[in-house]
Image (tube, rainbow, N blue to C red):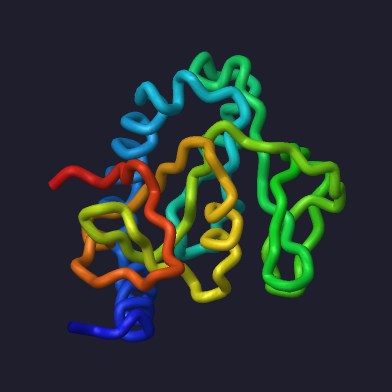
Length: 179
């Protein structure tokens, strides 16, 4: 079985070379499934991540947060990294963003909010919801003390068989592209 590092690099390569039309198709299907799900419908404070170019594109959820019925009464939160590989979630405000040391957009504000639902990023997920992320451990640390709902969104090739490690935290549901 491949190591996490090998899986991580393989999936990064697949993401970088993913066909644009197929990516758009799967993204649309997955976001529709997510926003129509019971877990989404009953959540009010939803933590999203600011996607890097190759990651699953959540921008439609940010763009539609004001005008879309699926987003009514939803407050969008995004992560802010802190020292010691810790993070908090802060209310999303497109006018209050800055680049972190990692080059990611994150809020300048430090007013912590607690989400009902976290859309957890990653590179690969196994059948029971464990994931391989980018290796920083921020989400696993946060999830170890989080009692709300967790989901992830993944393209069909990001479902991979691997054995999780003891410190890994599974998400409750992975929304994946249909074949």
